[in-house]
Image (cartoon, rainbow, N blue to C red; front, side, top):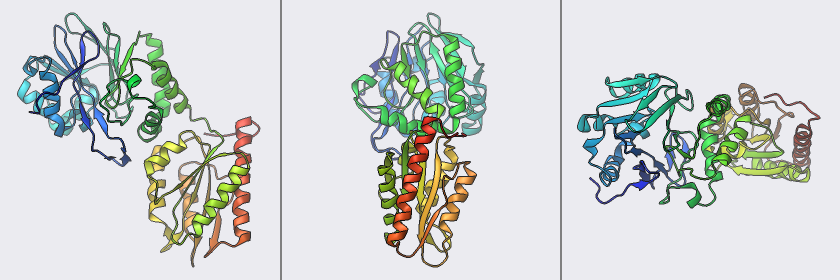
Length: 405
């Protein structure tokens, strides 16, 4: 066991006993440039309760932090809010060695834990069910598809804590446990939402309404990744409401890759037109950008402009990677345009537009396809396209043009 790692007290009855993963840089395709945490929480009630575990390699870190408060063998209950393995990797071993009295999960969670690990001893709880810890009380709220079918929240009434599993989290490794200690956090929260929760935005809107109707006095939000919110609760909830609405803005994001700089020259000319037209513009060359950064940038955008050369009758592989990833995230706040260069066949632009069609993204103008090196006339067309898109974004923002999500 890792020695001398300490728990952090959150409230009168609750300790953070999680693990810090400083090294992780890839989380199922999401680039985690600042690492992450796997948060677990120990409730010291008449029935000592552990909320979630951690990723399997961090078992000793979790045990050490628990041991700084109590003998782990005194844990009576374990609650699994989410069955993904970064939160349940230690669960089978904990059940085997600690032999808790009961382990709780949602109905779908019990099913998932059986399928993942063969765990048959999980007690399923219903949406809205309460659990007495003797002197303390937990309430469970199902949050299906936020972001797995099994997901749920747990609320500790006496300490007014919402254990929100993956909601309101972020991938941010830090020695600080609270959001007010880490400085600027909004960009990491936005990146997390864009890459994890964006496809489920309608459910996020519904969940926020559901929690509001429950009228729970929440003073702390404790997610399973990143810092704990003891301040700025209204801010993060407001951001989730905004991100879930997916309202288009006047920001345009240009994403491209290039072989011999022809597509790059087109991207620069489109950018010039966008800037001249008054659009906030972000350019992401894919040899210096990552799919998860693209997702984060389009969260508060209104247009996605994608460029690719054609190679072997196909879209360039890094561009195909990004578009495949974005297709799964289902953004609803953007219009689209395609551009590219080719040597002898030129299918790349058409294939980008096919992605837009599959994603139900309106194509704001015809694709620009240039053979070999763009001429001055070609670049002027690119610049004009940028101006056209900027004007379209302004018109959408002003309400003079309809926008269908």
